[in-house]
Length: 496
Image (cartoon, rainbow, N blue to C red; front, top):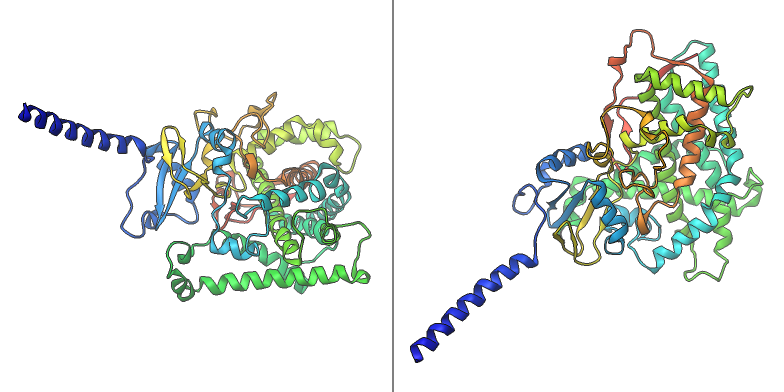
């Protein structure tokens, strides 16, 4: 009897051990992914200039969700509309944080901004300020006269180059337009790239983007700061931050000295300075709060507009049939006018389809600003641990053959009669502005600037390739030194 009891006890223990092991396996199921190396993880496999393409290739092997490890930091990459909906809507609360990296922390004045700061009561309050006081539909409409004036200046400049039979460097002209429009709306002044401050302003646009995505060893282990100093990354970051801060200091001081303002219209700095004295907010605004908010608007607005317009013109010059259709629509709908106004844009169905198709193929931010998990979550049966970086590949989702017929072909007709927008409200196969709690609050602000200039360039001119170039010579490769994907080679065309 004793032997039987001992045998049953032994079998029970073995059963419990097996059950325990199986239970542990069931309790944590990691997404698939490539094997990394000790210490560095998958760092050696990254392609910093084409990370979105690298992720897309991995997706063909491991599926729409896979795991990586960047030294000590776990990462999960998501690149399907179904799983994007899970992150942005179903489990948005679990995925609404931001990884607080060294570069983003410094450039956001220790998290005082809206886009990059960790999710908290503070970030929610600051987003409300942006939406209500700075980026509301009413406010966007108030700045229409500035956008119209800047587009008019651009059209005149292109006309002069056309009359002289000169090649038009659209990449440079659109960047000048976008940065001038942003500076007038934000700062109340048009900063020319020929001025010292204006030149610094333009160069900082690319420097900020690079620092946002730069790799810092100190993000991954305690003594990494030494390597950041040796590699020169720390000094680059400080140089960019100090340059940015000095520009903001100059602009804010100009506003405090009313005699130096060039415009009577209240700009964004005026609004923020006025709100500093408002005691109804949960957090008192300081000069650093103002600078952090300006950084968000400054770095996002000009770059996204420039990238969007250049990619649209690139695709249209490569595809003569859509080019002819969109120009015919513009010129037949808006007749007997020398200029397209923002009020004309809602009538232009095919033009709107061109913008959507451009953003599908070439989202300005192909890898949306990374998120970080707040708590343990489950997606597609896989366990995602807290503090895991979550990357959403908008570029891959926009080219997924499960959602798009002939995804590599530029075909605006796919959006005719469709209610799908760029904000993911109808389908998460279009997540141009992100979604959920961390959706970009400047969507209307950015689209207004992009659509107006693109429509007028197509309305006012016929575009041709310079002599000696054929369609096959048009370079459509991209460069991704930061958050925004620009065309690698500048777009130069003949305007007639």
